[in-house]
Structure formats: C-alpha cells, structure tokens
Length: 489
Ligand code: HEM
Image 1 (cartoon, protein in one colour):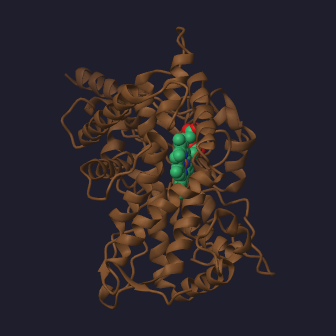
Image 2 (tube, rainbow, N blue to C red):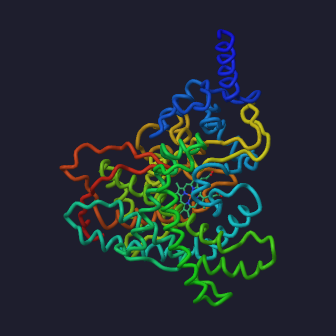
Image 3 (cartoon, helix red, strand yellow):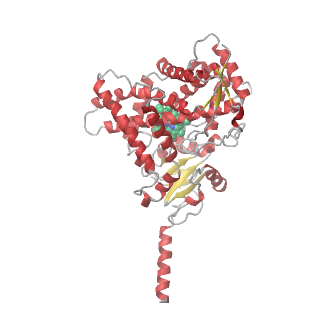
C-alpha cells in the first residue's frame, strides 16, 4: 500500500516536472512559471500593461513570460526595441501563427501574415496602391476633406449642445479608408457602417482580452462555446459584407481601369493567373478587411484621445488655434504641407499620439530564425511582444514622459523635433503601412475642426478620466464634448 502511494506520488511529481515550462539556455529571464498555467497569474487578464512594466523593473528590458506553456519575450525600451525590430529587423519580422487572432482571420490578410513571399508581395502591393491613389498627392487630401465636411455638418447641428463623438470619428475614419478600398462612403446612419464599426471595435477588445489570453494559453478550451466565439461571428459578418462588395466590383469593373484598391487587386489577379500566385479572391476579402480595420480603430481612437486632452488643456487648444489662424489666414482649407509652418500643431499631434499609445503592445511578432537580443539567445519561432508603451513613456527619452506636454516635441527655439523614441507606428520591416495616410488624416481633421470650432469639456462632466480601456487598441473612456462655433477666421 505504502509503495503504491509512493509510486503514485512520484508519478505526479514526474508529470508536474515534465509539464513545467522551462526556459531554453541563455533565454531572457522572467518569473518562475507554474506547470500548465505558465505566468498567467502574474498578468492581469483585463489589462497586463502595468504588469509588463512591473516585470521590466525586476528583470530588465528584455524578459520572458510563459503564456500557458508558450514562452514569449517582452521587449522594452528604445535600445532593445531598435536592436530587435530595426537592426535585426528580418530576424524579428515573423508573426506567430497559432494565436486566437490567426484563427479569427483564417490566416489570410497582411497584418498577421508570416514573414514570407505572400506577406512581402501584399505589403508592397498595398504601399504602391495607396501611393497611386494619391497619398502625398491632392486626391487623398481631397478625399479626407470631403469626409471632414460630413463631420462639420454633424457638429454644426450640435452647436451649443453636448455630444458623444465616439461613433462619429469611427465612422469618419472608416469612410476614408473605405473610399480607398471600395470607392464609396456611407452615411453615418447606414446599416453597413454601423455593423462594420461595431464588429471592428468589439474585435479590437476581444483580440487582446481575457478570453483571447485563455484561448492562447489553454488549447483544450478552444472548441468550447465560450465568449471568444463572438469574434469569429464578427469576422464572418464583415466577410460577408466584403464578399458582396468584391462581387459588385467584379460585375462593374473595366479591367485595366481601376477605380479603387479592389479593382487594382482584381487587375493584379488577372496578370497572375499561373499557379502559385499569392493573389487570390479569398486573400482579397480578408486583406480589404485587414486594411479597413487597421485604418478605422487606430485613427479614430487617436483623434478621440486628442479631443479629450485638448478640451481639458484649453490653453493648448487655444495656442493651436492661434497658430492655425495665422498660418491659414485667407486660405479656404488646410493642406498637409501646411504642417511645415505649424511647429506647435505638429508637436501637439505627435504628443497626442505619444500619450494615446494607440497600439500599446504593437502587433505580436515572432522570430524567423535563431537569433540574439541584448546578449540573450532567442530560438526561431519565439513569440515576441514589442511593448511600444515602454518606449513612448521611457524615462530619459522625453522631457516630460508622464504628462501631456507638447514640449516633448519642441526644441528651445520652438521648432518641431521628433525624438527617436516616437514609435507609435512601430519601426522596421513590419512598421505600420498606413502611417502616411494616418498622419494626413490626423493633421487635416484636427486642424480643420480646431479652426472652425471650440471644444469644451462640459461643466457637468466631472473630472476627466484619462485611463483608457485596454485592447489591441487603447480607447478613451466614452466622454461628451460641448461645441461652440469660433468667430469667423
Ligand atoms: C494612428 C493610426 C495608426 C497607428 C497608431 C497604427 C499603428 C500600427 C502598429 C503599431 C502596427 C504594428 C507594426 C508592427 O507589427 O511592428 C501597425 C501595423 C499595420 N497597420 Fe497601422 N496604425 C495606424 C493606422 C493605420 C492605417 C490608417 C492603416 C491602413 C491603411 C494601417 C494599416 C496597417 C497594416 C496593414 C499593418 C500591418 C503591417 C504588416 O504587418 O506588415 N494602419 N499599425
């Protein structure tokens, strides 16, 4: 009897030791993992950002955590980040393929595509198509101004009143990228835009939320009817809408005369009929959704953060308006080039992006081969978490890392300067491919609206809450704004 109990005990210990996750040799240090659970108890499932900062204080800028049995390396601070995603860019340019988000997007599209031919060709195609559709030229500016007019109309109806701006800015950002992709915009009340914005905003929260972390950590729960299934349903809904739009394009296009991104893609498919092409209709629908999603939730949450701070730092709002009035005097509308004469406005927009920290953990990367970082060895296929938050508020990189202060981007002469640690779009080969479009949108929308309106924090709104809601994107807590028309400029 005693021998049997001893044997059973030994078996249990053996199984636990076998299940215990181990760090490979010379792997970055980190907290001791539990068998099966890994370090999941060291991280808040709701919002792990503070935990990542705490672990950085204990283990340094490069450390590791186990998400269930899977080891991940968290990269913090400018020096380590640059070494990884810029200097050794291709070593760190992969994307993990076994996460919840890969399942939701059915391994199609560009954002989550692994480092390889399909990703490279699709990335190059998007950059070229965005350029051809006028990024940097007037047509993209005109499209953005066109959409701004709808925002102005909505705001003018609310002069003297208090409004909730969340949906309006999401709709506007969605429409701008939608015009590039599908050649059309939607009225803010249209069912298409309502559904798509709702699916995008929900999935941006589910994708990094507690259920996704549990899904990634414990494969055994993946087929259960748990709340993460909502994300799959949302993607299905969006995919149906995208398929309809692609079909519409197929029926109405004139080959060789593209009207928008989808037409360009269909032209490219015509050219690449042979087997082995990475361009396909299934790719196209998910790719269009990828770009639509990436271009909606990011830009709109940055703008929302901007107005939250501009309303509650009214002296900064006024100084922006002064500069805008001076530089645009006599001009009908702002152009993107006007930024070169607006150092203060530029500093404010960059400071808004720094403090908004819109994509706090970037999109997860993965090593493409055995490599090294800051003296540690990191095997091929390791999940990499680039903690952009730790760079955007790193002590020593900013004059005032922990406050909203445009001086972070101004030198002693009042000229605009951009510190190296400004990387809200990440850096290296996987850097955001919509940066150019996003920067143009942020500038034209903020400048045009600040020129025309004064934005006021309502008297009865209480103290502003600057703590955002966590997700793939950080979202300011819902707030209201009061609108006044400024005197004619
Ligand atoms: C303020 C707005 C935006 C911010 C802060 C932002 C930020 C980011 C970040 C941090 C990444 C991850 C980069 C990495 O993995 O290293 C990313 C990737 C990406 N972004 Fe953006 N983004 C913004 C707007 C846009 C827009 C407007 C588009 C649409 C054209 C877009 C399209 C993409 C795509 C396609 C990727 C994946 C790139 C790849 O994997 O090669 N983004 N973005």
